[in-house]
Amino acid sequence: MSENAEFDANATPICVTGASGFIAAHLTAQLLECGYTTVRGTVRNADDAQRYAYLTSLPQANGRLELVAADLLDWPSLDRAVSGCRCVFHTASPYVLDTKHPQTDLVDPAVQGTLGILEACLKSPSVQRVVITSSMAAITDQPGDDVLTEADWNKRSSLTRNPYYYSKTLAERAAWDFVEQHSPNFEVVVINPFMVIGPSHGPGLNTSNAVIAEIIQGKMPGILSLAWGFVDVRDVALAHIRAMQNPRAAGRYLCAHETWTMAELVSRLKSLELDQHHLPSMNLDHAAGRLLVRLLSYFQPPGRRSYLQTNLGRIPKFDNSKIKTELGIEFRPLEDTLRDTVEDLQRWGHI
Ligand code: NAP
Image (cartoon, rainbow, N blue to C red; front, side, top):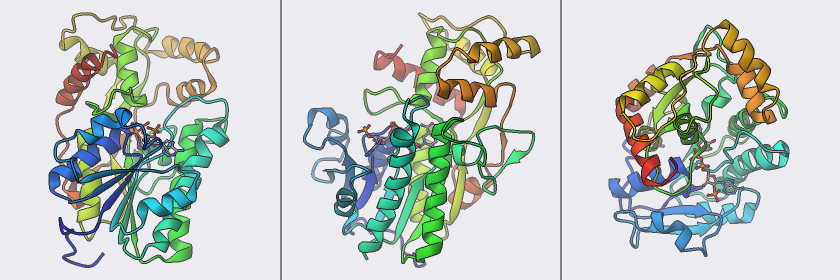
């Protein structure tokens, strides 16, 4: 994208794939709020108006948000979705930890969807930039002692070990390989969020917010030796927009604010003084606890099992300076994010 190519609010549409998703709905809302005239969101069931009422009733959506049908495995639908757009945000990808068919349920849509979008953009000369939602999952599936940066790549996941992580890694690799092979006229920028939480525009319970809900509902056996690099969904959406707006944005952007252990998370949740909760109290965040949880992990579905086995006792450390300095992201306090998340989980009846 050329210098001073700040997007004109009256210019061609901006496409958001998977607009119904947790992150994409915030992105769509913020794009409308910023004044971009036409936002074209892709959904899988465009005829089901009721299902997407939370999108079509967003402030300023009337006449400016168009929902079109697209499926990641149906490439002609992707061609139609991006045709004539100036920027494409590719966020759609299945986000589930457990599935019996990781190749068809996770890897195929993630990889084929990314390649399909990039092929479609090649055919549409209007496209100047594609912003892809990758993940911290493409950086590592087993944090070690080193500080993680954009230079790190997940080399360990497979169809049997953290298959969701595998799908995100293969999809992002495919995108960069595509850029190398085709030298397209458009630029590709990638956002790599960690554990995204926050309020949801839609009624669905996102996989990452579900972790907070499970903890509050007492579905965890105790306080486990786990830790996550959290980030607010509203900051993630803004990072995507800045990645479109900033002509110098390039490469990957690790998008995470702060690491909290599960013990810290539970203590913050306690301080919110929830009316009805079953927060875990048994401390399993020690060597014997880790051993016990490791044994218990063998009785978990495969996705959860491999997640526990690769993350127990590991505290991720990361360097988020690139997104702060280059995209100007100032992460909001995580305490506020957690409070908003819990209030929202209550609002939707998830807890
Ligand atoms: P989400 O709420 O589950 O959204 C996923 C979106 O992808 C939904 O709109 C879904 O459509 C769409 N989708 C899935 N399979 C599709 C297919 N075959 N064809 C068309 N659309 C399909 O998850 P999210 O958290 O917002 O995730 C958005 C992106 O962020 C994903 O790429 C995810 O990997 C990435 N990410 C998420 C997190 C996190 O913590 N949430 C962290 C890092 C990266 P339906 O509504 O029809 O199912």
